[in-house]
Length: 126
Picture (cartoon, one colour):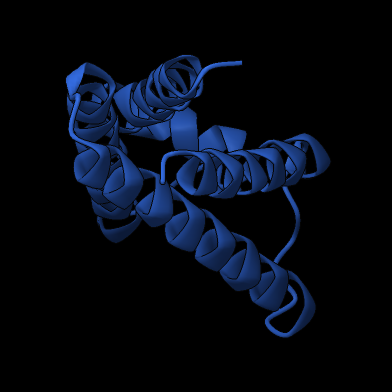
């Protein structure tokens, strides 16, 4: 797989995560197990959706860029953000005893593959 293909896949994934959190935060909240979210939780979903859309847009910029520094910077940010998300989620599950949502294993697997792939392609872009 080429670096551009990986960047495009992660960009599309970011957009697919971000759009529901912006457009339909109640549905997104229900997916994660919160049936009747309050205004603060809906605001958090909107914020996280905006963040995902921004990462998707920056991924598109990296996809179109020929500058290695831009591409490497975006790939490394994906590594840091994805690993941090995994650590926070693990902490919330095991220390705060948060109930896992229905597709946690699949999500954590996708995030792990994304982080490892981003690290691989970051190293390949030298």
